[in-house]
Structures are given as structure tokens and as C-alpha cells.
Image (tube, rainbow, N blue to C red; front, side, top):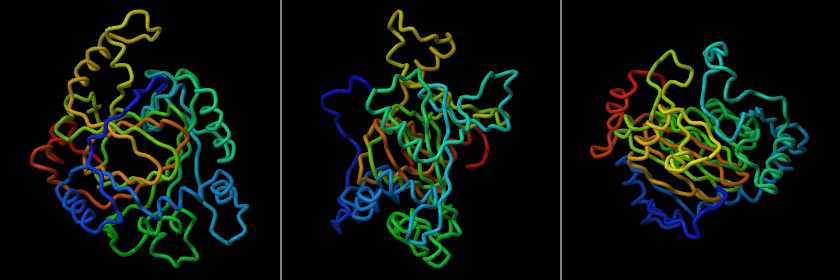
Length: 326
């Protein structure tokens, strides 16, 4: 994060949303359960221009003057930059120590101020990092527009009750999830069952994708009783430290072993920039690093069980981690 390469070579297929022929090609990729990116998406670019800190904050704190219903969100704090997913109700502090992240009583405005600070000072990875998340319930799209919150209004292709390119299976849509990250915030590798369209309004995030059949190499937790079930606890940022001495970071031999294994997993890296939309197929694993203060929202369009014959699907994930919720 602190010393990126001069050039990041993109290998993921990109499609222009304003070109009908390219949209047709993107639909073929989508039907084949292959990841890709769309660029030149008007509503995403327009939302990016609208979503200043003042604009977004006004809808979370209820100070907007346009009669739009208020939105709800929650701030989380992690002990460092790495947000390892866990279910709080299953996290036993007697056995596992303090949880990797906790909810904090911050407003969006306060979170945004810290995110700006994190960019300005290049916040070190060992400091507390903060993350803001908010969701739009699936029922909202079925209500009259006057009851829609700002996210649904600003991203109509994500909230429409009718099929769109991004929300192509409305009956299976589970709402919209929005994530506001600050520099360095890293989400551990995990998969989602739903076919996932991720729009980046502001900032940029790096996504490291792995197909379903790579699951055995990713250190994914397979115990249903574990608070991080179906997520990995591995911090891939440490792979480059394995052959270094005196890194100042303690790693157990087991962690080192798993990092070496994961280093051999097939991966695809892409930087999702403002105005772009990333398609992550069902059961594809993704590891996410917020490169700067950022805002992204996603919607899912049901599960594709078969997946891709070359990269796998639900079957390969079930063989790896067992049956579970998505």
C-alpha cells in the first residue's frame, strides 16, 4: 500500500457500458460466471459526484431538506487494518481474546473525518482503522419512490423492481449493501453465494479474486461453530514477508505454512476505481483492500449453483467447507 508499483497491469476484462455490443459481450461473461468490470456507467459516475461527505452525512444524521427518508449505518473499529470477519455472538473472548473488530458509536461525519486523516497521514497498518457500513432492505424497492432512501434513488439500476443489467434477478435480490472504507482497511478472503455487482462511487479498492475450486488453498475456516466460518483469517499482505527477517510482525509456524499454501492459489487482481462496477460470480473468493477513502455499494442477484466448468461452483465450495448459509 505504501510502495505500489509504477504500473498495475489489469488482466480482468473491461466492458464499456455505453457500447451495446460490449454490453452483450458482458452478459455472456455474466452467464458463464466469469468476473469482469464495467466502466462508463452514468448513474455510478453521477452518484460519485453527488456523494460528498456533507451530502452522505445529511442522510445519515437526518439534516437533509428534501424529505428523503433517513438512512441507518454503523461504524466499526478494528485493532489494526485487517478486518477479519467474525460473528460476535460466537466469539469467545476467553478462548480467542479480544474480537478483531467492534461497533463504535460514531456518526458518519466523524468517520469521514477520520478517513480523510488516514489518507493525509498514510495511517500505519498497526493503528486502529474504521469502517462504515449501511444497508438497504430488499423491501424498499417495492415501495413508492417517496419512501426510497438516497442510495436507492441514486442507484436506480441497483434498486429497480424490474430486471436491469446490474440487478438482473429482482426476486432474488436481497437489498443493497454499502461499505465506506478508509485507507488500508482490508477485508479477509470470503465468498458470497449471490451473484454480486459491486459499484465504486468514490475512491478505489484492490480486489484479489480466486475461483471456487481454489478454496482448499485459501485457509478458509471450515468449522460451523467457529465465529469466522467460511471466511479466511489469513492476512495475505504478509505473504511477501515470509522470506524476510526482522519484520517486526509475529507469525506462528502454522500461519506461515498456510500463507505459503495460499501463495500458490490461482488469483486475479484488479483495482476497482470510481465509476466502475465489478461482477463477482457466485462462490468466488475475494480479498479487498481500500487503497484510499472510498464508497462502494453492491447488490446480489441470486445463487448460480453450477458455476463455471473450469473454475467450479457451489459443489467445490461445499466439498471444501461443507454446507452452510450464504
